[in-house]
Image 1 (tube, one colour):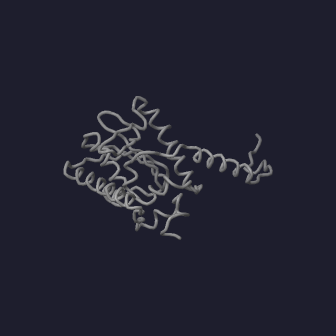
Image 2 (cartoon, rainbow, N blue to C red):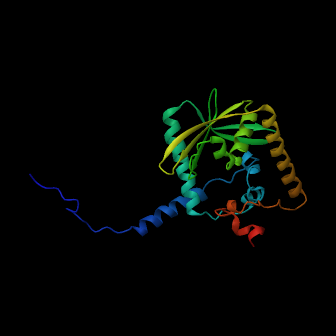
Image 3 (tube, one colour):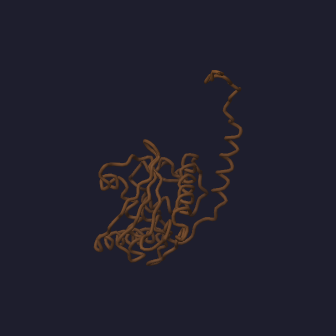
Length: 222
C-alpha cells in the first residue's frame, strides 16, 4: 500500500501580478466603453443627487473594488435568474412622471430586485432593511411604477458564508405614494438647481463617497 503525503509535490507558486493587472485594465476598459446614461432614472434620486449630475459631465475614475462589486453582482443576476426564471424580462424598463426605472427582472406576479452584499443577514428582516433604506426607496418606486403592492428582493449575502435570501416586501399604498412624492420632490429640486446654474447639494452620508467614481471633481472634497 502506498502512503499518501499532503506535501508530496510542491511546485513553484508565485502571484501573477502582471496577469492581475491585465485583468484590471480589461475590466476598467469594459466599463469606460459603456455609453453615457441619458434620461432621469430612479437611482438618480435615491442616493447622492450630486453624483448623478456630475456623472453626466465627467468621465468616471473607477475604483477596482467598486468594479469587482458591480461585476459580481451582475454575474449573480445572470447566473441565478437565467437558470431559475429564464422567462423573466431582464432590465425591464418602466417610465412614470418622466422618470425611468430598470427593474432587474420583471415577472408575474412579482418583480425581482437582485442585491449582492457583505452585510450579514439578521434574524429580523426589518432590522436588516433599516440599514438599506435606499433599497426600499428604489423597490418602492418600481412597485408604484408597476402598480404593485409586493416586491421580491433576492439578496446574496457573502458573509459569513455565501447564501441567498429571498425577502418579500409588502407595501402599503400610502407609503408607496409618500415614497414617490419624495422622489419627485428631489427631481424638482435638482431641476431647479440646474436651471439656476447651480449644483445640488452633496450627500451628507460620507460612506457613499468612499468609492464614488466622480469624487475627484466633487466640490465637497476639493
